[in-house]
Structure formats: C-alpha cells, structure tokens
Length: 314
Image (cartoon, rainbow, N blue to C red; front, side, top):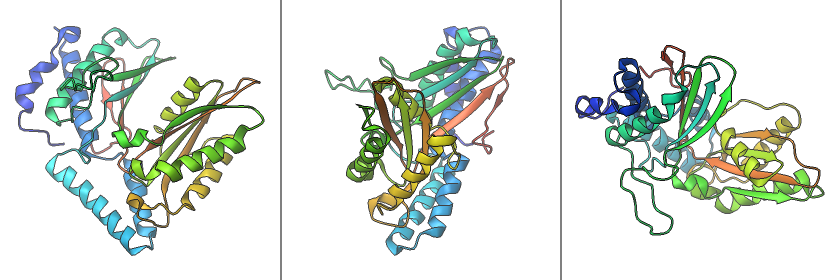
C-alpha cells in the first residue's frame, strides 16, 4: 500500500507515551495507522465483490453507468492512495480483546495514536464538531472520538475492527421501542419506511444493519455491529428469515445505485437479535453506504498482525 510522501517524517510520531521504549508497540501503532489509511482507500473484499456482482446484474442503463463510476472511483483511490470518499467519518473501533491477551493496558493509547497518525497520513477529513459551539476540533479528536467499543472475550488474542462511516450513513438510522403487540411486523414496516424516506441520503446500494433487544440502547448497538458482518453471511432461525424478507422488500423499492433507480437497492441485510423484555420490543436500524469502509486486524500475544478482510494489505 502506498501512503503519503510524509510517511517517514511521521513514523516517529507513533512513539508516544503508551508504547515508549517498546519497539514492538511503536511498530504496532504505526502499522495500525497504515491500515487505517488502507481502509480509507479500499473497500473490504466482501463489499467490493458484491458491488461487482450487482453491477453485472444491473439492467437499467443509467444505473449501469453509475456502477461504472463507482468502480472507476475504486480504481483511482487505489492508484492514487486517496480516500475513496471525501467523508471519512469519525473513526470508530470495535475491539474484542482476549482476557489473557497481555497488551490490553496499552491498547487504548495505541488506537488513539494510530488514529491521529492516520489523520495526517491518509489524510482523513476533520469531522469532529462540538455539538454546542459547532466548532470543529480540527483533528478528529475530542470526547468519544475516536470512539472505541470494548468487548472482553476468552483467549489470548485481540481483534480490532475499524469503521469509517460518512455522515450520510447515519441519516436513516433510528431506534424505537414498540409494544409486544406491534412486534416484528411493525419493526419491518418502520425499517422499510425509513429506507424509502432517507435511504438515498446514505449513498445506496446500502448495507442494512438491524438490531433487536430489550431496550433502545441495546438494539442500537446491535444494529451498528450488524454492519460489521460479512456481506452475504446469514443469521440463524427467525433472524435469518427477517434478513431474507427485508432483503427482498427493500430491493423491490427500486432505489438503485445513487438513488437513481435500478434492479437492486441493498448490498445485504444483517440482523442481530437479542432477547427482549416481556413488555417491550426494541428495534434499531443502522445503514452502511455502497462505500462501506471497514477493516479488521487480528493481533496475537506477540503483536503479530493479520488482516482477514483486506488480504492485499501488507
């Protein structure tokens, strides 16, 4: 992967307090920063393959040309080492850390430093705005930015998934708490109506993430995590049935690539369902654009790194 010409000048900036004196830690920080740049420039393998498939199936002439523009955009982003969309969002990290992984104490600092390094290297667009003063921090840093979601799991390895979502991806999102009597049928209607109303704002074709849980916050978190699942993967049981129903219904809307009409409107539908309370039925929707930029890095106990959904990265 090519990076900006100031790579060498910035590489030393990775040696911050949390990893000071640890060559492996400094190298991990810089490699994570390089990977963030790569994620900004390239779609994950599953999303890119799905776009190519959909382009081959499209019958609407205007939509065919739109797909060709998307593919040309991907080619140029790769060749020029530039973000494939100017809106690189606020970096969000989903961490699964093994309880026996020995580097948990430094990981927050590594992620924050890597995010700052990538801001300069990629470059990433400054998107962190104070909600009260409306002033941009100018460097993507601020309260809850970068945002890190933590999960402790068994084992001695760690997995970090970064997600760069433009602002439009959040516009169709919602979380609602329904009565049990309204239940799944009302949830389906809300999702379809919201995509019909605002799906075009999220740069279709879309990845649809749906979360079901006991409360609005749980459902919202699950819906966002559903976007991290591979396109084409499937849940089990009732969640799988809901995925199929929504996939078919949303494609029938005919939104098409860029919202100009077409054969298909969604890349995929992913549902994560938790239990609900007997008195409530919480549902949430999150959406990912056609240029869904996410990437996963796995680290063993010696900080060796692998990149399962960006196999060309090295």
